[in-house]
Length: 136
Image 1 (cartoon, one colour):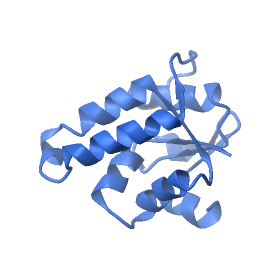
Image 2: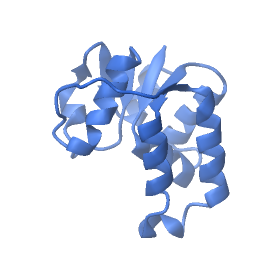
Image 3: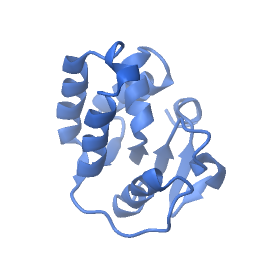
């Protein structure tokens, strides 16, 4: 099973140990599924972790360890063009789902419109809680 996790899921895993996002991240670390990511997303994760609102709650060494761990995932160098997401900053997530032949795209962003789609290509789009409860 291949899964694209929105960057907000990775950040949530770092912020809320034992929450749904952390449970998903730990399940991947236990080899229960394969994560599809990209150079674009790894750059975004590093950049977002430095935002002022995260600086006081995220420890840089934990972010670095996560980025290093994600090097074991399916890391895509190039992403295909796909239809624009409602939030243009999320278009790369849709491209990762297509290029990585993902079964699921997991996002905690209710405002961006991804969850309202329900599916993109073959990927079912779920919240972290729904993915944890229904798939794991």
